Image (cartoon, rainbow, N blue to C red; front, side):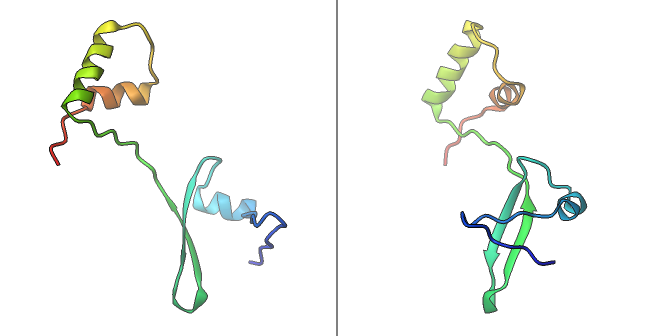
Length: 87
């Protein structure tokens, strides 16, 4: 498959390739240059992770108790799962 680089340095992945790989707007790709100059591109999943110390945890608990804002569902889940990271 031949792909052309545009004047901004961008490439366009053909729709058939995006469909075959299950890529949608917002998908993340890892790009590597291998020995011999080969370029590899593969999809990756990004998972949000929040790491807080004791002070951060106490601020989150205070915010939870205030109940003044509605946070995104993903953030609410992370808040509920938050623990202290001792490393």
